[in-house]
Image 1 (tube, rainbow, N blue to C red):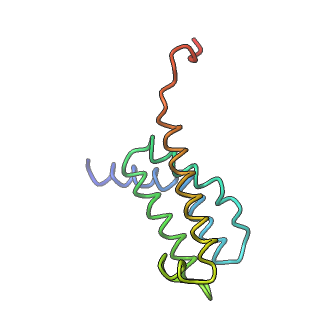
Image 2: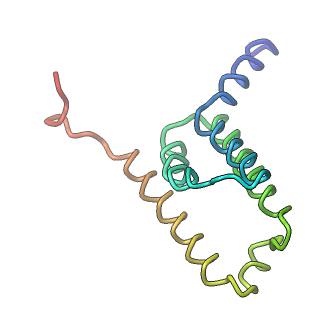
Length: 122
């Protein structure tokens, strides 16, 4: 693949709606905005893992890391999972992490389920 096609593919992948939402969440966190859209992002990540090309998944991984780093910069924030789990918010942090892991797994498995031929409309 030449540099032009690589750049074009990279630009398209960064324009993915999920990746844009992740970066938008990072901006909202930085500015104290509403982050309730984060709830739907978790399932979207699971579906992306199941059906998207590796390059797109890597861009999404970078976007997730950017959101996490934004949160880590907030005043009073812990800087690692170990720090969070040692804090007074440990139970809430762990519950959130387990919820997210479960949602990602469920969305991944659902996206990978083959559709029975009888369910296909012809």
